[in-house]
Image (cartoon, rainbow, N blue to C red; front, side, top):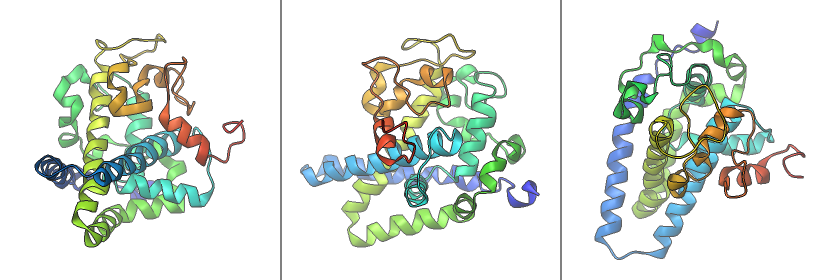
Length: 267
């Protein structure tokens, strides 16, 4: 049943989507440098990064759909889902299956598809061009397959991505560059940093002795924000708050507290 519903045929589409995301991101950076800086552009970049990286991927694909570490109302879930889809990192099925079934279950072993034990650049981005449909099992996301909203997103994520980006571009090209394109580029590379640098076992510190090489890293906090406390997450993956010490500010968790319908989070 699951194989019929969900063969990972979208893997090549997801991977090659990286090309326009990177090209558009480079164009946005070039436009930003070439022209006089507009404070409205800075606001657009900040808002876009919050929507795509913080809400869509960190709070959505990662902590909500992959770990179910908090609950939200359906309208909020649909908003979070859309924020994740416009970041261009594939469907939530693909993302969660990899994260649940392989990265956490077999972290930093041969079965972890993006561990730096295979090399830094492999873990940063090259693994995406090597992974095959047969390498991913649907058994890790049976619960997600039953979710009609996620099923619809899985089937139409490319259409939603391109329509959303084209709609904003039709309003204003610069608005698209800085609200949509550059944040998608930055979101992609923030997660590339997490899969690589935070699992090298060389940079940062470990608060917990986990069975992997995960590290907390204050130096990359300005880029990855609350995801900088990666060792904390591997020690307690079901906890939506990655910060364990007063200096480990988890910006994603602050947003989750605003969005969540779990009273304990908002206490």
